[in-house]
Image (cartoon, rainbow, N blue to C red; front, top):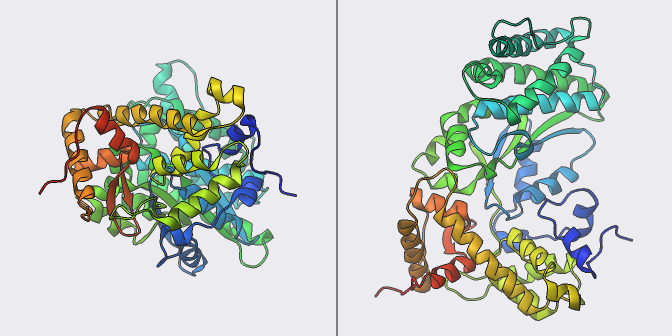
Length: 453
């Protein structure tokens, strides 16, 4: 019997509709094949697996909207890998602050995660390989601590009596803390690492090789290491530019098989070609369409969305008409579907009736209209007047009403609108559509969307 079953209580709805990617038992019990509804010409997981299984070490960029299911698709691939694979997964949301990040910070976080996974698997690493790595981090942390100590006899660093692996792991706590919470001033540890990012890259490569060789000693078949860095797509516009445009070659030269998630809005800048030059291997996880480009209902997409929800929530607690309203208002964004369900399950009337009726879904979606409006009008890290953004959104909505193809445009306003979730790229065919909730927001502001002649 499955561990996780469709919810029949409100508490189960909240547990089943978590915004976290599916993994483990939840992946097994809630997984729904979505590929045909995303792109019937290409298969994301097959393409990714083919790249990973090749003899050549490749770094793959995976792009798609926040909440479209990228991480779950990646987790599905990982779950199907054989025992010869050692997967090193890093969630940058846990490891880095919300903004002000550079590629060197990502590399440092990856390095610390590799150390942790190596220790957890009791890998016997070549200590001669580790000596310069330990010396680099030991010197970096000492330099930082001595600067802050202002002449006091305080030093950070590793215990000289330990093994080299023990020393490196001993430095991990400070480096991890500095990454997430520390200063980025010129005296900080992170600044010291950034100043030597090429050296850091070399040490990450040396550590990765040492781990892969040690893994091959105990793995079946030919052991391989896969580095998966997730949620880079949740960083801001400035961080995305710094990491993937300014320092893309740094990440692309990591000599491990690697997967990086990247914000879809990054491809709407004039510098997208710079990213493509650094990362020739790029795969998209397309949106699941609710409507076709001409406005007709997309039954294939709606059928898959129904199946996804019904795997998690039973009809006894979410009637069919409420489900249809939920799908219509989601624009195909899975995150929005689960957010609305979770919100609706907390309403007083729903708690009393123990059923999420259509009116509750409408109320939850109504609150999300205001949320999407805030993301448009007050975009993080951007000093931008909202009116031009709203006008741009209304213009695209007008084109959409005329059943026109709204193509890819290298435009900073479109980047912000994509990041806000108000604008959606249905990226199997690369056309833009306005989120149904954003259309309601425009109507709320009395910005009427009229198709031009």
